[in-house]
Length: 368
Image (tube, one colour):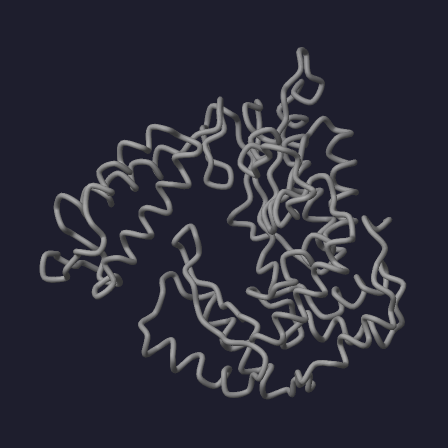
């Protein structure tokens, strides 16, 4: 795998890494146990806990960490929470140097659709359109989700990355690994994490693309989410018998599952599926059956939430005292979807008919 540009000389990298005051002390067993406990708590939560609970859960972790700030965020789909480890100033600067000067010089696979540097994106490229081109308007398509992807990217994965794709010594690769990992894994929230995920998956992506193409499937990967599609041919041999059809439609998931196992990852089976176009299932929360669009369920929910907010004066309890935050959240979602589905503009107009700076709790009813 050739680099896009020459990597910095090792002497320069070592000088920069030695110039910091960051304490890279080895994580002890007690701290790792606390960290795993927090991750376990996170994986079991369906919604954001109250601030008091958050404080109690995160306090032990914050007490034993010099380089990261910790907090929870809701998943974009609204069905859980994530633990974010936000690097502090000096760590963020070092990670930015590593990302820009080393990691981003390493090629990523053709099927990677997330975390792509701006200079590597074709004009007018969007990941949504790329998802549609991969799996949209196909006779069959589906998804596969990697289970706890970032939590299972270990310091061994990262060390092997530097040893495989850079010319640096063992000692320098270990130091780079220490700056890019926390508690033995790649933390969500780190500057380097997203780029590292693409490089760790590089060889798997290349093998998968080759195997899928041989069978007529297109495939893409957005971070921890694979999507794939197949256009049925006239007198298609794969569909001559029910057994052949079943084997063929199971091929993408079986292939992904097998390749991931070699790297120490596994699928989140509850989020994996293959279906026919007429089932109309969304991929990456995008409607792609005939054209790129907003899923009906998502559209209806946005319309309903906006109408409740503006007309009925009803707001989820979590936004009590933060009505402007709710307004901003709704507007952000509407702005995102308006780029894909212009019909959303009507709902946006309703929302923007109110002044976010004049919102008062006393005018609203809050519900759980």
